[in-house]
Image (cartoon, rainbow, N blue to C red; front, side, top):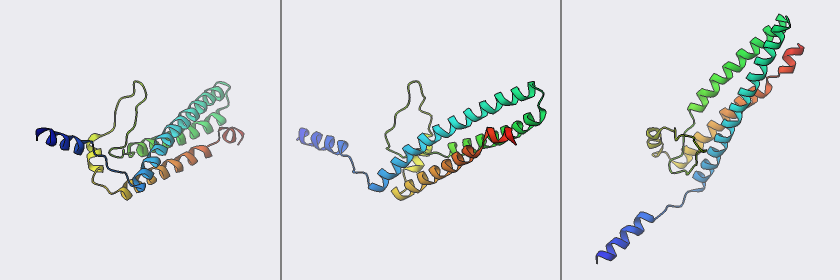
Length: 154
């Protein structure tokens, strides 16, 4: 009898629930959000570095007009960087969604926030992930629209 109870308990603990298609879709969107976040961060840093280099180059050459234009462009990039961090801070995990961390990367998501997320419906999870993706795509478009070459040639 003890064996039967133990076997029953083990099977209940090992039972996995099938995820809905909506939750699977939310997880896919979340993976896109994570990748998009990395891409946007890289774009911002790359453009900021290039603008900074050009700004120093033109200032050293005595071209204060172009250096001033580049300084304004740098200000736009800094504003977008701030906006990116606001969006990035809003990225939430989907409870139960398995993910990995790069070597040496800490597990830095908010486990208290995850507990709050557990009570949401699958549709709500998809809606949240889709909105995060939309915000990052808008930000990416804004960053892509910034042209170092156009600023210099104006």
